[in-house]
Image (cartoon, rainbow, N blue to C red; front, side):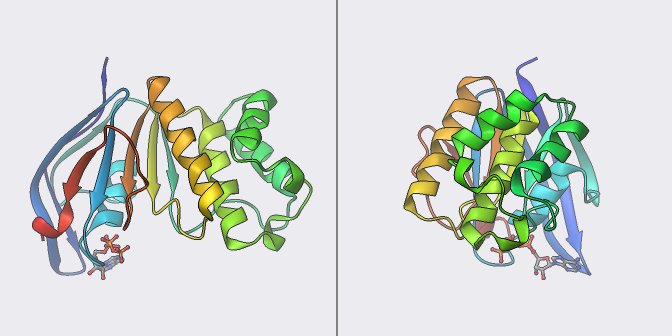
Length: 194
Ligand SMILES: Nc1ncnc2c1ncn2[C@@H]1O[C@H](COP(=O)(O)OP(=O)(O)OP(=O)(O)O)[C@@H](O)[C@H]1O
C-alpha cells in the first residue's frame, strides 16, 4: 500500500479557536510534505493530529504504518549517556543495535555516545532526537522544526537522512519556518488555511 497517512476533511480546534477545517491530504511512500505558515497557524497541531496525540474535531486521520515524532522535547532520558538513551528506544521499537549504530553514524554522533543527554548542547540534543527517529524504523516521520538549533553541517545530515528515508519507501511530514532545501517536496501553506 503506497499510502501511509491520510487526513479526510479534518478540523482542528485548540482551546476555543478553530485552527482549520475541511483539511484533506495524503502522504504516500517516498513523499514529503512541508507545512509552512506563521506562528500559531497550526503546524504543530497538524503534526500532533498525525501522531494521534490530538483528536480531530471533525473528519478522520488514518495511519497505515508506525510513525516517529520529533517535537520540542528530545524524548531522551537526560540522565543516560546518549547511546544508552537511544538503546532504550530501540528496545521499545523492537529494532536491533545495528539500527542505533546506523542512526548514530547518520547524525555523526559517535564522539558523543558516552555523554549524558543532559550535557548535550541544543543542536547535539536535536541530532540525538533525530537519531532516535532514524533508528525507530518507523515508515512515517513527523518532524516538527527538526532543524531548530542545528548548525549547517547537522542540517546537511538531516537533509541526507530525509532523502535516504524517502528513497527507502518512507514518508515525511515536516513543519519548518525555513526551507531545508529538500528536493521534490510538496508544500502546504497553513497561513492560507487560518
Ligand atoms: N494546548 C493548547 N490549548 C489551547 N490552545 C493551544 C494549545 N496548544 C496550542 N494552542 C493554540 O493553537 C494555535 C496553533 O498552535 P500550533 O503550535 O499548532 O502553531 P504552529 O503553527 O506550530 O506555531 P509555531 O510556528 O509558533 O510553532 C495557537 O494559537 C496556540 O496558542
